[in-house]
Length: 196
Image (cartoon, rainbow, N blue to C red; front, side):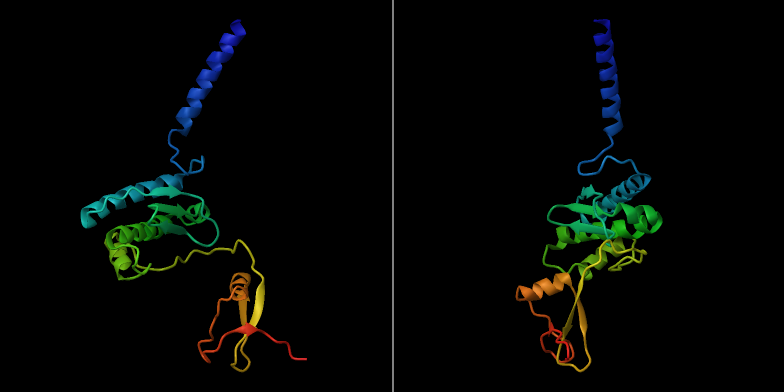
């Protein structure tokens, strides 16, 4: 009987520790404590204050750390959600906090303030990102290694000695009826015919 009571106290004690240890976890974040997550959240909080003062928009985006591959961040205005690439954030923390975080938040602010019909990196977005103190660049300059290799397919147009190497994604789109046009001859691309 005494052992059962002891086990009960140990379980309750351990459960309390687990709950305390997980109390910092936000919805949709993996349960991995990372200094970069805290830096990014502090930056987001500071930027949200600036957004409220400058644009009159209250922003509290949901943050997820599930993005992989070559993209550093991704914003979804309809869901008020930002996805970040943990690997790039940890590899380039200063640039990530200074540039990527405002970049993605600027997308959400532009969406909230100007609607969904604006261009992703248009004048409205540029005005917001400059107000947030970052450079209006479309892409990051982090060194990344591709996460996957896509098979390439040879296509050609009517231009002499011209060949296009299209990824499997574009090849499949063409198979479903999508048409890609050569900018020089304005003719549709077709599968390359091997000369016999």
